[in-house]
Image (cartoon, rainbow, N blue to C red; front, side, top):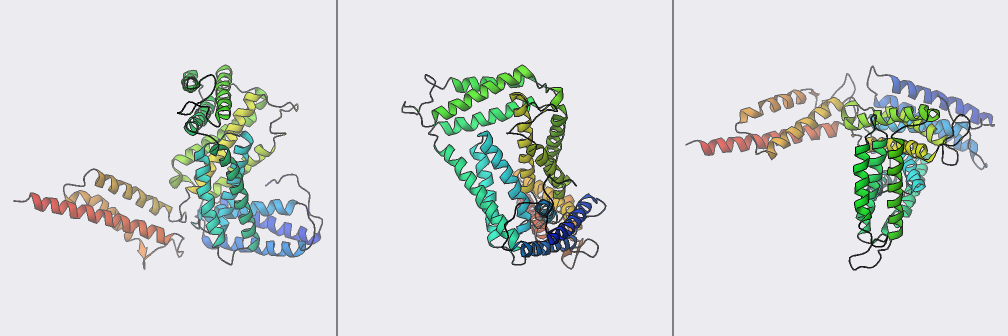
Length: 442
């Protein structure tokens, strides 16, 4: 596993800690790659405790010393990133370690939104809610979690909240009807970038988006957006600039037709591959995602993102990418980070060992709710397939627990609660069908 080019520690005790952390990271990577069995809580907790012990020793070594970041910090970051994703995988999504990977991704997304100065109110609302939840987790965390980790998470959450406040202040300046127009323009811009990176370029699709931009352009009077009362709306200049950026981008996209120069093809193909893989996972995350797998995507994206020089990529001759290439690659990087964020916040509070049962119950619940919405069933017999499936799942329990071998995986409460909800829905539908039958019997 390669780490960025950072210096080795000079202190011999730090070098020993680096060796032990490297071993822990390697064990975590092996655990992640093993698809023959599900990830057990005890395996993750053991490696987590070992990492926390190394952090304690590292803090003792560094006490009272001025220090700059070295290889120890990078390997420690990898350990915490992996452990964080493992905590999600075993269903312990509401514990402090699980928050580490999310704060990393949110920080990365906010840095990109700030850099590009292209964001919507929806972007900020989602991340604000997630940060509020993470803040609660950090404040009410178990005392056995590393104080170093808790302090780090608290600082990250605070930093992210400050970034969101700055971005939100820009949107708050927009006067009606500009917030809605701004949101629409961001949506069109992203749709244009999506069309630009599809396997088969469609000029028609981009033209339709461009026509929407022209419709918005017609709303201006002498180049200004006005309020209902007829005066220039606050933020008119900013939204006009955004409109012009959108028009110029659609023009460039139509001119280039999705053609990326040969010198940037390798990085483009890697980013397209990552985006497409994450897109597939986002469609069926509950059935196909092991959260620990996100680590590889994140690391690839981090390396590509951090290889930029003054915000741009260079070809093999050291020449910067033209604007079209830069924006196309940045879109793919940002879209992929967005997918990772979505997949993390969708993580269920259930161990991957119980996910097959949990997913079956979620499907059953959706089916029963749909039956209820359609007016129920005409006969209790129609519920027989649902009852059979629910009873077969219920019979899997041993002393009220869903066991896998001798293990009791995390998420028992969530699965049992979902099972109870399904039984309740089935019971309501049966009672309603029986009442209807009685009413129809002379």
